[in-house]
Image (cartoon, rainbow, N blue to C red; front, side, top):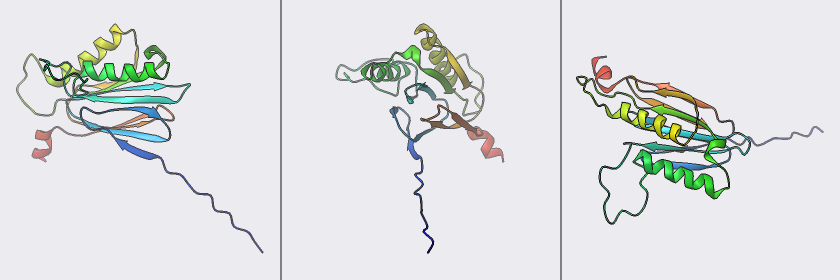
Length: 172
């Protein structure tokens, strides 16, 4: 009689991070998000196989409400503080992480102005990481259209799929 052994295949779980959201952890996960003018900063610790992603909409909050004591992930400054807090809780340092930056795309074919939200978001990420002394090892920022990201928490790999601006899709 022949014995047949079946090995269960465990599929990688997917976690989607919405705008203003933050994920930090470990395990066999693909962390995914969709970016337009928003920016995602990805952090990965190659030895500990832990990492995270923050997805922010604006660099900073223009005014702070008296009742808003909690950090808000919609703002890059506060999202970064949330990630740094998580990094410190587990006893690591931000400079130990491989950091990648994505997003800041131009979503509408509007006339050029001196300030574009996506460009400001991307500039903020690079400037603040430089201030912290953290090198950015990979980036895909600004330009036209959206980006769909998938971050493999086990390997640190990031896949990017790019799409059109809203107005370009309407011309098709």
